[in-house]
Amino acid sequence: MKIPLLNLVGQYQKLKEEIDAAVAGVLNHGRYIMGPEVRAFEASVEQSQNVKHAIGVASGSDALLLSLAALGIGPGDKVIVPTFTFFATASAVSRLGSIPVFVDIDPLNYNLDLNQVEAILKKDTGIKAIIPVHLFGQPCDMERIMALAQAYNLQVIEDACQAINADIFFNNEKPSPVGDEAGLTSKVSRLTSNPLRPTRKAGCIGDTGCFSFFPSKNLGGFGDGGMIVTNNDRLAEKLRVLRVHGSKPKYFHQVVGYNSRLDTLQAAILKVKLKYLDEWTNQRMAVARQYHQEFQNQGLTDKVVIPEVTPGHVFHQYVIQVAERDQLAAYLTDQGIGTTVYYPKPLHLQACYAKLDYKAGDLPVAEDLCHKVLALPIDPDLTPEQINYIVTNIKQFIAL
Ligand SMILES: Cc1ncc(COP(=O)(O)O)c(C=O)c1O
Image 1 (spheres, rainbow, N blue to C red):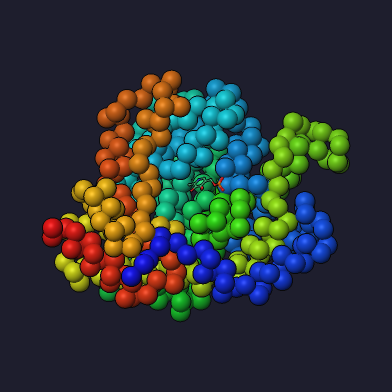
Image 2: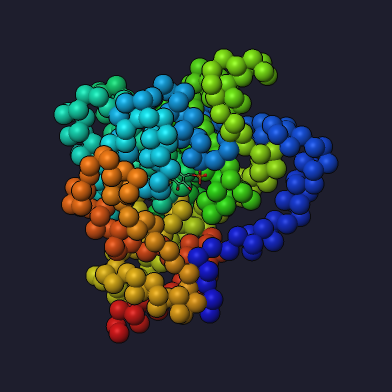
């Protein structure tokens, strides 16, 4: 059996007619930069994610950069970021001359350890902003983050690049995990049958939220693309100006901005795909539930750490923790199963941040997880047989 980590071409083939028609529409009208599809897609995101403004930009990385710039974060300002995330979360901070303050993560949900965040905020009065990352599609505790932001006067930029469409529950609304320990069964049935979904979505709670449409994302384009969402009218206006060289009207520059627009072609493709996002999200959760059950049925949960499930998780990735991770990955490759490691090195130990003077041992949870994490295939179309094959192979490796 061959099971790739992702099957992007398969997804295109299913939607070929609709996508080809959308692309042809753009090729025929020729407004390749800021054509009407950009605004149409933005409006669809506003509606589906229940947010006032959506502003298409060139990538998720730029969404973070422009957000920080619009919020006035600049040289010397300190910004809290998790050390266990994709590099762009921190590089956006550095590109503005600001200083990333790296914080360790919770070992089970992979998001910022908020006790450590609070301890830093108590000691260091120079922190201006925080970038919580909803890593692997698992929502951060935004209720606590917003309370900290209010107490310490922080700007909040949500990195929801991996978490578009994730529901955010505040404490009094969390569905109780009835029936199964992980709460996944109840979560899946809630999402498929309960019309009372919360109206808060990842990215739409902080000052701004950032989405990436990198092809492998839950909503992926056919190239780079990104989006900023906000409920703040003034910020939205600033961001719309910043993405077009700071000009308004054209050729009259209010500020030094960026060239960071979402391509019309990408917007046209993404607008087609957005219609399927709820369905794909539910399928991903069903796949995650099957993995959970398979790991439990095969008696592996003492050898393999399976993901914790916070309500709202959209399973951008299904990441396990195992000893001898690299050997397991090689074994699975030999069996035709694609896997990958997100992430092999925490950001505070990256060469480009040597000048910040972190050392090994400073943020031990992330450092340890970098040796253990392994992302398994999480295509919405994975079948129970494929999941059984993957977990059976993991069991065989462990028995070797
Ligand atoms: C957590 C996170 N932040 C930021 C980004 C940057 O997004 P992009 O690749 O669209 O620039 C990504 C994805 O690549 C990501 O996963």
